Length: 415
Image 1 (tube, one colour):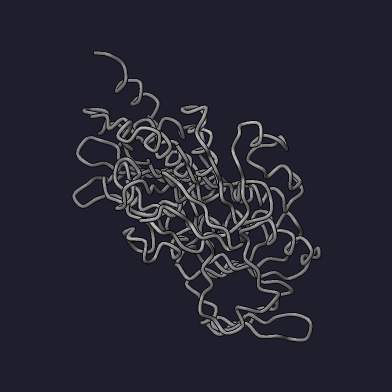
Image 2 (spheres, rainbow, N blue to C red):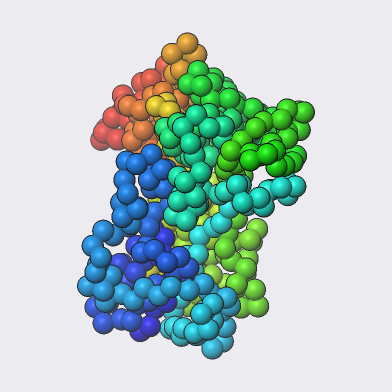
């Protein structure tokens, strides 16, 4: 059996390792489009603050790891896929054949349609090559503008401040991390960052980036002009699936539609990670879930079904994001925005930057936001994923959201 994995991120590596465990003799090839060994993008901020070197970002540290597993790692970009011929055309002119293929090509940064966005001093923070440019471009105390205060933006924010940048963050939403935190939580996070010396501008967009001597001037929709030696763009991402046009694979919102086996609309073509339109555990619906734990989960399930189709069904990923922003931990779980007809409760200590908000449907906990509180991370996930009927404990949590451990023990102990 010949397995081809397009994409050298966490989903692709986990899939390759899973396939090797299941079949000692199969041919397994990983096609990656960057010159470095497979690495984690989530490790790049730690590289920027010198907590690790480039080798520390690698998913597997031994230089001969993949060779030892008899997994070929090939450098090149997939340009097209012929599902009838079961072959992939690569940017270096080669053609790779397969019996089964996993598309784990991830996503790439979106460049907002702003005049000046293509200037050489406007950089994404997505690849190791980007990280090298940022490290070379930041001088201690230098003015830096970060476009976007979403999940990725806030991870980058931490490293930019630690590197000594005089940072301004521009976010089009009315709060920080608007796709992860409710208004109270996101606004408190904004206050925390401002207290740490970061200039945060929300409900604002960048309208132009222009040269100003050796620096740049970032013009905003509210009329402000911010000087910057460097601009980092973190305005969102989109799936890398364009090369599948004409292959017969069904795309939804730019991502690959998959079934419960992580198989696409075309037999023997599977998808995993940021590029897959995967199942949400909480809603049962399908969407792009661009977080690393989901990618790893996808890769494992896809590989098992590539080896033996129908071996396992993906039950859906519990959307859970945990973010450390300048020492303040924020988190979102499941349906943190709530549902129609559901109940919600919260506990707020604004002065000490502590907040917890719970969402219920009937007597089940379905989602939560927390800020400055880390003791309940595992319990919250367990209650949501377990779909436990809380009975009287729902009202107790409505009255005191901090009784999560007690509620969990009551829900999980035999009657």
